[in-house]
Length: 203
Image (cartoon, rainbow, N blue to C red; front, side, top):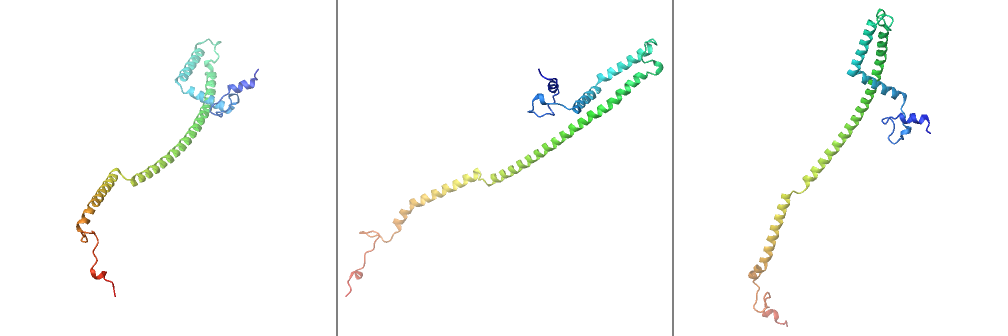
């Protein structure tokens, strides 16, 4: 059988305050948090039209009953100026103002945390934007240094024309050499016949 304390601990669960991995039986809320949530609920209820209508009906019934009921049945006689009702409304206003302020302070704390988170998120987005801008500039520099398609085509066309010109020059070279050679001979082409003086032996 579970102890009453453990049941109370299981009931008092605050998923926003306790860590996510903490067991549900160990999540407890403080008295300040309970009071803060109550003040927010009270302030939220007072800001509705239902509360205003209910309070108006309550005051009207109170006044009508104590004004029209017999003197012995009146619990807040009109002769006393409805002192009990005035006391009740004063107490309600006295407690309502601090509870509304407490709820407002909790909302201010949440807004402050949200603003801080938004600021951090904005800084991260700014850093990411600057990083992406630097990467885009680097990519633009790389693309500018790369050869374009038209440039590659023009270079290939120039190389093909150069190769065609060289192959045409190699094909016409032997024919030109055979026509312009003056040292041809019927017996041994390309060699000159030695003169008789150069073949005589010396005395």
